[in-house]
Image (cartoon, rainbow, N blue to C red; front, side, top):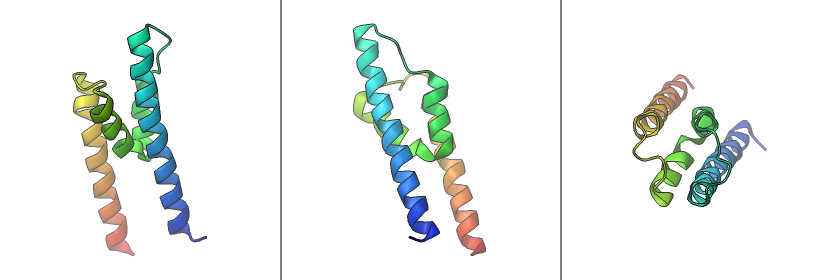
Length: 91
C-alpha cells in the first residue's frame, strides 16, 4: 500500500465520520438529547473531513445558518484545496 493509498483511505474515513456525526447530531437535536460539540465537527473538517461536513450539512439541513459552519466549513475546504494544489505542484 502506497502513501497515496493511505492518504485516500484516511480522507475517505474522516469525511465519512464527519458526515455521519453531522447526521447523528441532527437526529439528537430533534430529540433533545446530548449533542456533538461544534468544535468536534469543525475540528474533523480541519483534519480533512470538510467535504463530509459540507455534505452532511446539505443532506441533513444541519448547522446551515450558523456562521461558523456556513462560512467556516467552505473556508476550510478552500484552504485544504489550496494546500493540495501547492503540494501537488511541488512533486
